[in-house]
View 1 (cartoon, rainbow, N blue to C red):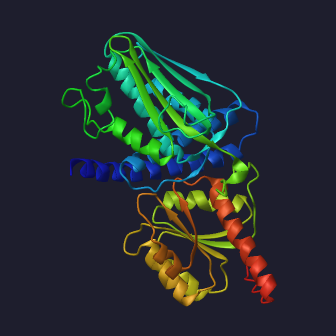
View 2 (view 1 turned 90 degrees about the horizontal axis):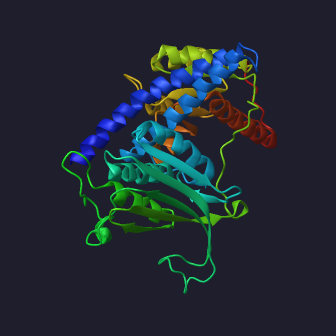
View 3 (view 1 turned 45 degrees about the horizontal axis):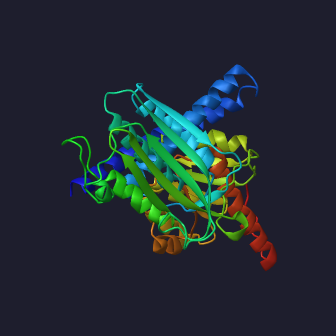
Length: 391
């Protein structure tokens, strides 16, 4: 019950962080459009975007902890994730502890949730740091390839034949005694004093690794330190149909008319400016009822409705439902802060064609709009029933 309460609190905090990061990201992108690439100002603004993206990933970890977000299974470049994770760790670990990273080049990718993998790295390294307490020490994080040619003769129990990525975290701490080493992955088992840990860290790591079809092992010498090895099976990109998110710097443009509904005026202004710069016509309102009135007055004027999920007096789902009943051909994009799940039944009933999770960067909303509109144009062309709306 305590963990559930903490999770609920964490989810609420994450929602507020998401709103702030959303605004920071959006207005920084607008500012970058006003300065020449290659200038110091443009470089400084890119640093803000990078920091906001790291904050966004931290919020994802909070949401994962609070069980308010679903795992996003995708191909993971573990090398890049570990490099980014080490930057985070430097700020979280006492300065008397050195962190060293050794990452082999040209490594393959694995299949899983990046946020969960980040959580594995963080938990292992924080545990390593805590094992050194107040003394100076070193944490060595290594990432390399590991081949198992014959599972029957493998010295690592649970590994089948194949290629793996091995994430190794080694510390120079106090080590783990033989009497308890077999219990360290049990839920709520901890040797820490009250107030210094829940005993959930390593059990969570074990669960995540298992969900990746991986294996975790530990070796330790009391007084000398411990080594945790995590093995993740490498996948071939061509053997998976996981859809990769677009990272193209070419942001698609358009000329359609968008009706945007969000109860936060600062976000409305941000989207209005962003989308107009991409060529779109935008009508923005912070009132769902006003959005309905606008649609009743000009039912053929708009090509797509973009609406926030959580709004006072009328939720985005309720608005989408009413819009879909009256104008079933109007595409709807839902913006969600990520802590509130959108049921498949709601999506089918309300005609929602895309869901984007806040904080949304400009290219994500632009790609979502373009994907829906281009698909609709192709469909109408095939049906021979083009319905050009006035823009």
